[in-house]
Amino acid sequence: MPEGPSVRKFHHLVSPFVGQKVVKTGGSSKKLHPAAFQSLWLQDAQVHGKKLFLRFDPDEEMEPLNSSPQPIQGMWQKEAVDRELALGPSAQEPSAGPSGSGEPVPSRSAETYNLGKIPSADAQRWLEVRFGLFGSIWVNDFSRAKKANKKGDWRDPVPRLVLHFSGGGFLVFYNCQMSWSPPPVIEPTCDILSEKFHRGQALEALSQAQPVCYTLLDQRYFSGLGNIIKNEALYRARIHPLSLGSCLSSSSREALVDHVVEFSKDWLRDKFQVNSM
Image (tube, rainbow, N blue to C red; front, side, top):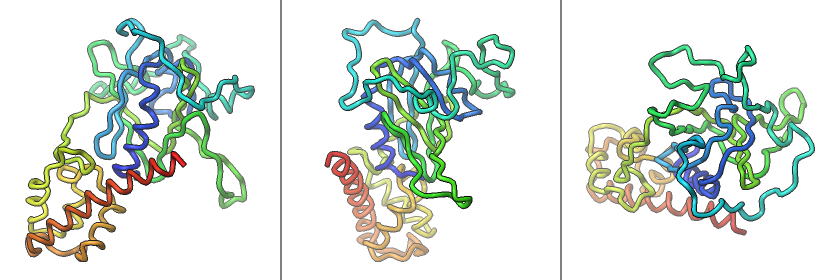
């Protein structure tokens, strides 16, 4: 799954749409109905480790804005002539109920948020996005097939969710799981890309009597760290993945933390440099 630097990049792509209204929806999601986002306002976007959180509010709870949202530079300005191109393979209108009542299908679980429609006013409206191995977000464009599948067909990836906004642009979510959640818990001390990352806490965790490769993947201490960062940091520090943390010298543990932070920041910087070229 995408690691901290990649999800930070996704957050950067989504941020220009904050303050805009969803005017059209589409996508293939069956668990979370795309039509539930119709007429909602994207109010906030946050990233925590490997997860992206988006807050949506309905019209009646919007604060008056000082100015209308401005469309982001380089977005499509013309109307799409093909419905599938504009909305994605499974376009959704505001009504989605099987009886034609306009209400999405209710959830069968009474203990969790109804994933088919936006939570009520007294509930939290944060959408938690967890990306799969090839998860991504596209802005004002759709992902295209890069090669034929095993059957020889050139089929474009199917978006999980497509959101068109009042500013004229749209976001496309691929290979991800989404659910309504409480407000995200902010723990910058364990985020490897945060300025408040707590080295002492990380070093203490690495001193445990367990393989360091397991400790590095523990999101309680190294939020946003995945296999790519883990492997690169261990290689640079010349530490075997199965080495017990308690058997490493303090200098080795410190070097490992240094490489984790350094490689993560370099990776994030490279992502933005490639995009700006």
